[in-house]
Image 1 (cartoon, one colour):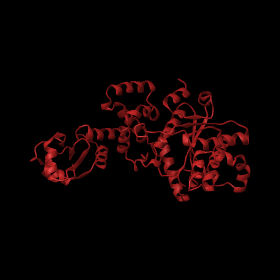
Image 2 (spheres, rainbow, N blue to C red):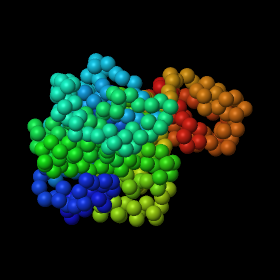
Image 3 (cartoon, one colour):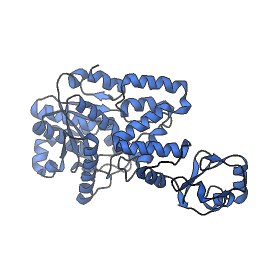
Image 4 (spheres, one colour):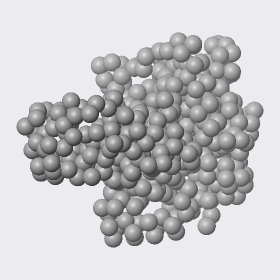
Length: 411
């Protein structure tokens, strides 16, 4: 299967500046670039579709140039609803280094990193307006979605943001000249900005360059897109979103979206994904597709050890597995994830109230008598039961009320 066909079947292709995708992706090995502005100190899952696309391109023999926008990050891409807050050069520099380190870990070797502040920071305004600005018309710029929306709003649009597409177009021109980049990939919301570079290269150099965009990812069940602007960001930085939380995010993907996500966010073959889909349709309740997705993406971002630890902790908390033989990483992840407190021996009714699994002794008794309470993996219906240190496994006692309410006692 050709690369163009596989990427299309996986759902990566939203728009292309060429009608012949095979010409762009299969006829020759290209230098491909993607840019990200360091508006935060971490990338998030909304960025991952493009990052995985870059890995596919890299694996197929294309060379990848990864641009971190130390220059454009100080200006800000126009948002449809509000002006971006300008950041200091110190803030942007810190974010640049963090995202670069993150991307290095994700892509490994053979990916070149560039920072557009290296050339944008040296521009002379008069020369830039004469040599670059003259190739853009206001008529073209105001047709771009975010700019058009802002021009009709009460907030208006500053010249700073209005100039952003020209700066991004200049990035492509610069990399075409210095690195022979002939393909840029990015999210579909960047389509207009990316075409600015294609046009600048054509007008200044009479040469051809291409762009391909990936669709914005939306959960079909909720209609929400992945990304920090929606207030539901899941970060690639383990300090902002732990590997366990990251694993749980993918484990809880809706049935409507899970197969699409397997195609786009993993390197599992399309043939195997078809089998996973058949298994999932037979018994959606066991969530075989979500489990494969969560394991594959967590390993891709955080490594195999963190993925296995997240699997084990999830199985303990929600699958009834024992604490026995927890390694140090798994125990740390477990205690970081679940609410916990130091052990105190006592009657179960009192313990449930003390740790917040019941609001009163009366409620605690009701939970116990109805079979909703587990202690150390065993359902309990005795309201007189005493929680003792001898119940501990690996010095931990797991208390559960129902499927999702739990607390760990550290002995």
